[in-house]
Length: 406
Image 1: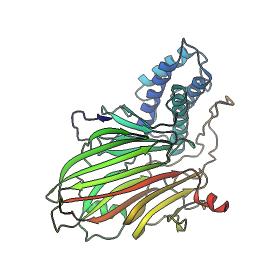
Image 2: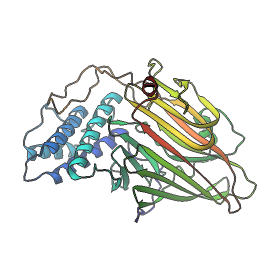
Image 3: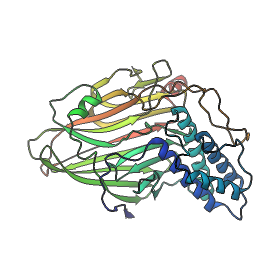
């Protein structure tokens, strides 16, 4: 099955809206979805839990004054509609910890609604919707392990990757991933920003044409666009594939139009959630599990088959793997928001405790994000084409824990 995603092509160089706006629009979408699943104004236990998580998310945003949600579903949705209509209901200056607390509640609500509607089964599915309110359709690609959020109209970027079991976005909120850059191969080392300052941004700033392709046990979004890079008319095709029950994404690239004898450097930019210099159980490692440091300074690997970011505290090991050797640079990137004291944490619907502000129990959120960019010196074959593939795995059992069991 193949489904086209194309709308009127729009160049959206600024990308999806801010992280807070994305959270608010996702909350609105889930609230409407909850309303359609409810029967005769009564809540099934699963839907009641989903409603509780949505209420916690709205409470942490500052949009609701009460710490207890209304029992009646009609009253809840009336309050939700009032919150949705309020243009300034969600504060764009909220701390990173508050955003993470909201996100955990939204992911849990998403999980429960999928469970109730049968979407949380063993298969992967795709959902097209304007999730961030920018007027363009985004894509939610989801299976039982992951939810990937893509914006074809904004450089074909991936603006979220949720690990469903731990309720966490493993990518940097508010920063794009899965963007393409070209530069001449004389630039060999430095921070990610050094490469980007000299790179051609033609593809990163364009709207991609997208198609959904479904096969046995897999779903793929194929994105394609053409642009001129250093006076060379090139065509980039990139695909993100998700398999049933898999904790791994497959990424493939095909570049066409490369003249014979011309060398270019090509890089794929990703932003990962950050790590703190004062936290010893979060670190960067190679694929053999050897620590490469906390990455408070740029890390350049001239010959690499991949890199991982292990976070024992949250129970995640994020790994980028390439079947062929690439050059890889990892650089810390400051957050646009820092955590404030007295941030909030999520409340459990099983205990029905009030979602009141508490002292944060998470590690410091003032850590930088990590800009991760595998790159290659490329040249075309006889048909002027070059291709590569790599994978991004969200391992729920971090490297240190695996080693401790052996």
